[in-house]
Image 1 (cartoon, rainbow, N blue to C red):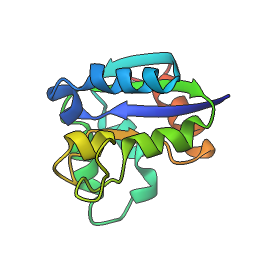
Image 2 (cartoon, rainbow, N blue to C red):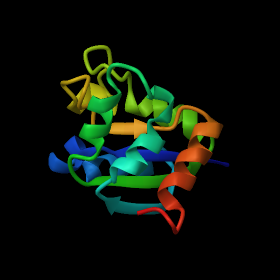
Image 3 (cartoon, rainbow, N blue to C red):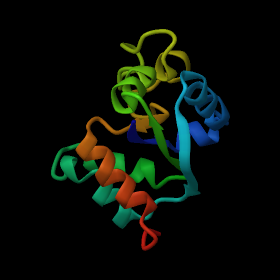
Image 4 (cartoon, one colour):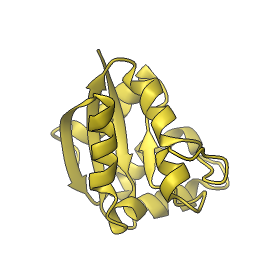
Length: 136
């Protein structure tokens, strides 16, 4: 069994897609271990997107993720990281396949509804960031 981190971004919360995303994860057979809704602080956003620090789109990423509430989740299941990424779809909704979350619901590359950890290391880091008791 593997754990992964999945976050519904502000656009997904605003569009009331949290329930649909949870439904898809549950129907795939994953178990929801933890969930929390929060408005991300700038400090947490910068830590979350640290690998993009210094890139031209860093400020846009941080500003967007802080623009409204998100739902951060920990999911558990067989091959949870790879399968969740497949369910989420390509980060560019125009390249995301129908049947994926982004392929079915997203229209903009900058507002693509969800974030999913891309490796065991990223999942562990993101889970620690969002589910540490000291996190805002």
